[in-house]
Length: 370
Image (cartoon, rainbow, N blue to C red; front, side, top):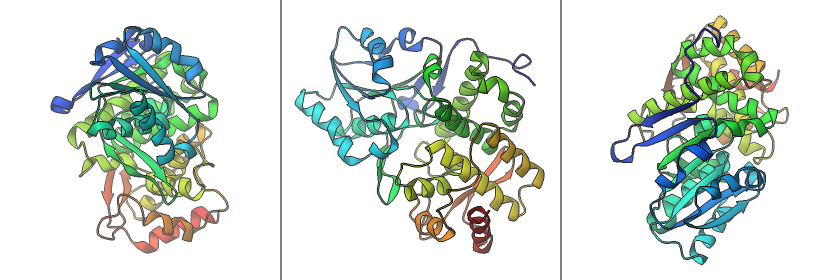
């Protein structure tokens, strides 16, 4: 099924994340910063926009244009996962307090996953909770981190260990922002897109296989469809399990391995999506050794990942012992048991602690001694 053969959404599309009184829309399409009506989600007279040094010069003026009747303050952070820390989070709190923002203030996250996670955590914490809006500007943030209400900062000992579940008032996905996204970051975002096909949507996985070239060329229709399908998949899971008590954990396919890599590299090596790509390949390998995932599906998985210039092996400096030491601190460890997301086939994932330690060790050894 090619792009031309598939049902492509119109340039602007809205998806609802159904969480009762905490439900909110995801607006997807071209020129959404200008057309989605940001002001309708701002209830008070004050707004704090959080962005970074890369994104603010590109898109902050357009956001300010929509908020001319508000008191708008700004925090411009340094760009990079290594700056997703409590110290930098405190810069947001300091600005809120110094500018006398109250409980009716609205925070706006304008940037990628780091900005979104930090802004959401600040909103969850400031005066015990104020509204916030997500305007994700990277593919990874548009299809994953901006949706679902996970907010956090990193710690030197573990990624996203300090945070809260806190839903935004709206997510505004302006696909035009992808035109300025560097190729490496674009491909890193594709790792999360591939994830949705692997965990619950085999038809989408097939569509991705058949539309690699269109996606790499950033064909507007192909991108709109991939973002919409990813958001639909995530919204469905989040609506069923908002705070990750059960099925939502399947969204972490590859993340336990990937977070170990990021922590090992002190958040300055592989991008998050690249680390997740490695993690998905390792999870697929363990699934195959466990007898649940076929060699054919393994080959298809690695082929799709590498078609977007993503890695499937960890950094050479990382050894199996490094993985084990860091994975035991993962958020999915319960009562001392490590749980992993494994695959029963393309489009079918399960969260389980029922795997043989010997096979995990074999997976780690094979990955680290390639």
